[in-house]
Length: 98
Image (cartoon, rainbow, N blue to C red; front, side, top):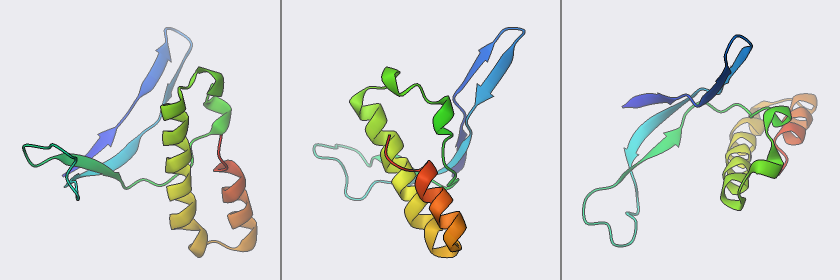
């Protein structure tokens, strides 16, 4: 099943910001330690960099920073082979670790 993940922030009468990614629901392999039932997780289908200008890095926990960095590494690894040198350099810059 494919679902969308759409976190957002909306300021009344001013603006709204929403990031939307499509993910596929799939069985985790391997299963987490101690799992008593089949465990499902998500695999991101939409591979686009998050706009770093919209991320208040000082407000992120270490785990949240690690998630953004891992997501950007996945985007970079998946897309770079299909890009020319200029676009690959841009992608490398906008997906650099926070």
